[in-house]
Amino acid sequence: MLVAKQLSLQLGQKQVLHSIDLQVREGDFLALLGANGAGKSSLLSLLSAERPLQQGSISLNGRALASLSNKELARQRAVLPQSSPLFFPFAAEEVVRMGRLPWGEGRQSSMAIVEQCLALAQVVHLAKSAYPMLSGGEKQRVQLARVLAQLWPFRPGQLLLLDECTASLDPLHQQQVFALAKWLSNQGLMVIAVVHDLQLAAQYANRLALLAAGRILVQGSPQQVLTPEHLHQAYHGFEVEVMAQQESVLLRPKTLLFNP
Amino acid sequence: MTIQWRQAQLSQGLSPVLSFYWPLVALSLLLAGSLLLALSKGAIVLSAEQVWQALWRGPAASQYDPQALILWQLRLPRVLMAALIGAALAVSGAAVQAVFRNPLADPGLIGVSSGAALAAIIMIVLGPVLFAGYWGLRMQLYALPLAAFVGGLLTTFLVYAMASLGGQTRVTMLLLAGIAIAALTGAISGVLTYLADDTQLRGLTFWSMGSLAGITWPMFYATAPWLLLATLLLPCCYAGLNALLLGENVASHLGVNAQWLKRGVIVLAALAVGASVAAAGMIGFIGLVVPHIMRLWLGPDHQRLLPASALAGASLLVLADLAARTLIAPAEVPIGIITALVGSPFFILLLLQQAKRSHFT
Image (cartoon, rainbow over the protein chains, first blue to last red):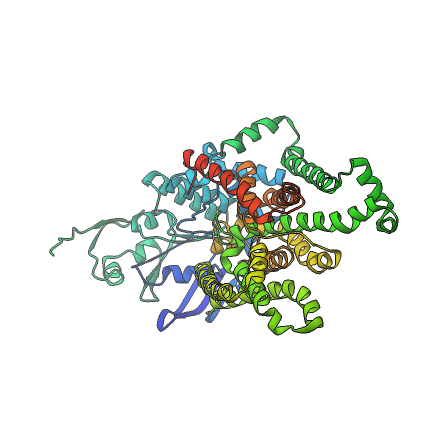
């Protein structure tokens, strides 16, 4: 379980986050939504311990995040960033093997895990390709395999953070990545994803948190969060029509007339 | 990388451990061969057997045996120094390239060499003023390498402090500060060169092109620990350096303390470059070319790249020094000229090949 209490963050003169409270239980798939600059990525960087805490507290499975050693933390939480440039000609499978770094096992046993993770991310055919030569989407899927290798063998209580990770993916692979993340949350992992695609969030996440100006405007189930009023408020006058609200939410944005 | 894949196919029949490590074994043999060759060749040629006998009898034999004297007092310190400098420069180059995430980075970029060079030039030109008299002259002998060493370290820390303002070390700042400092030291060196007299100028030129002539055991003992430190410690950081190539954030997500790793690598490289400049002047190209060639051959995995670079760099400098002292004997060619003459065409060839395969990013 991940418990964040009263998180505030100031960068320079700007107050980026205002006393955020957040709880994520094992098996939860939480989508962080919000307009550009709402504080989603800053919140994620605090939850990943990438940025030191200024105010508030975060605990992961009962222990303060700051008290965990680098290695302990790396075995419990993995982060898939928006993009990972790499200019050296590593083969894709070697990149995936770097995910095993916190576990420090031998080359052969790690290669067995790497193979399974390549298969889960559906990039087995890229295993021997030079990473810098791959397309943006292929790189991202290889990175997904690396993140899977880091969390292998997927124990309940592990934390997976996705930071706008589907930006470079085509629709099929977006669905694939989120389906995989959903499957991981069904294994008991906690998944937190920064998402811009509301429909994708509604489809896969069981909990949504809508951020606006560094505060959580509303959090809860997709049905509770994705209402025209909330979205209008969080996205600065974005007009959206909710088509269905029972089993899943279906949104239809109203056409904007561009009038320069 | 075509070379790499071909090699992977070639070694499929071998056991995984052997196929991973055989290039290191081959390079070790190359180094052993180079050392033996360099010990036997020179003004007086010794056979492999004579070299072995003289080594076996120990340094005490120098008192009555001229062959042992040549080997123990002249060739051994020089050859070992060449091997250590070559290893340390190549391994530092490879590690610094990982920290900067740029295959064309060089310890020189962060201002180590320029700082060391400036201090040495100050010492050569202003030394006679600073250290007048008999004792001054004697001190100047040791003051030059010491100044180069201290100058290199001071510049590195200055550049590093500038880049670390505001908590974390930014690589762009590090590079820009390094370039600025290099330009500044270049300008000051220019002024001092203008002030220098003819003898000093000749000393300056020789020193700035590098030379292992006149390496003695005291000089070896004074610089070897720093070179050894970098050569032995840097290869242990291979896993962290691999992760660092994915970016500092990703490395820290993988449990690597990226800040400390960067600092450690830069300090170790600065120590190694400072010590090598102190012992042998400026020797270019080893830190850039050797890791690059090794990367083309073995791929970018630092677990193999770092030891392979050390072994290849050591062999290359031992052979270059052998050429330096035998090509136009009894005179000597500055070793920096040899490494550049051999290194640059080879490097250009490699770059062209690489560009043809459009791997260059």
